[in-house]
Amino acid sequence: MYYRLYIDEVGNHDLKSSLDVNERFLTLFGIWIDLAHVTDTIQPEMSQIKLDFFQKDPDEPVIFHRKEISRFQGVFKRLYSDKDLRRRFGDRMLQGYEDWQYTAVAITIDKLEHLKKYQTWHYAPYHYCLEVLLERYILFLNHADAKGDVMIEARYKKVDRQLSSSFTRMHDNGTSYLSKEITQKVLSSRNIKLKKKKQNIEGLQLADLLAHPAHYDLLLDYGIVDRHESEYGVKVAKILNRSKFHRNPETGEIRGYGKKLLP
Image (cartoon, rainbow, N blue to C red; front, side):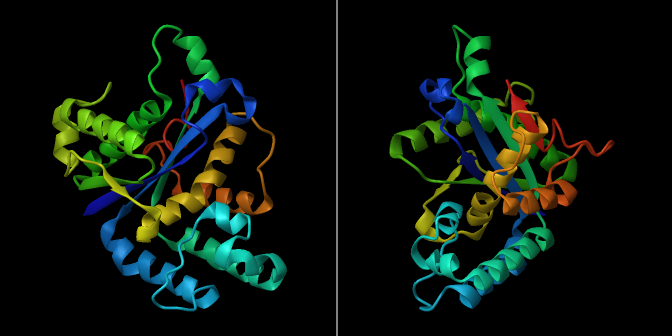
């Protein structure tokens, strides 16, 4: 089996913004999926949902983006006035979230506490979360005797270069807890795959749609917030907690495995 880890983020990775309570937390959310399942199931089914609800021109593919959907922007503006369409689309997506086979991990860093704990040395929050997320993915691949790679949405050239260098360094040298022998055994490439949103990659779109509910669910689980941001987010989080979040294989515990709060 060959897996791909698709990654999305919630929040701001700039340490300077961490004093603002609204941007205090950064979450790196990932889902790893057997690529055969992506090809055989997720791609055709997600494409069919787009055709059924939004896409009119076969040469202008619809790209799912949570922010645009929630704000009723672009092709999704019909959802604002047509409540029945909104309900049917939401239910169809929930069914996909339930049926599709993937494993989810949310790694969140409290940037304010990170600054307090490491007053003279600050590991960049994004790269800290990436290392912790990759460790879980690598251990999974090693246990499953499988190989895989990693894909993330491209952002800005400077940030992408830093991310690429960080990933390559982890591949070549290992992480704080994993040796380079293990990372190189299971990761098929020393380069992270950077893809733009317009390339219409279903795995990245799925990660984008799930990341925000997962972020709030982690904050709720650790007692940082007292509720989800939306009722729909509650429904998504129930699915993630029921069968998708990574777990301790012996105890079934999610905290520390599928959900991790740093530092």
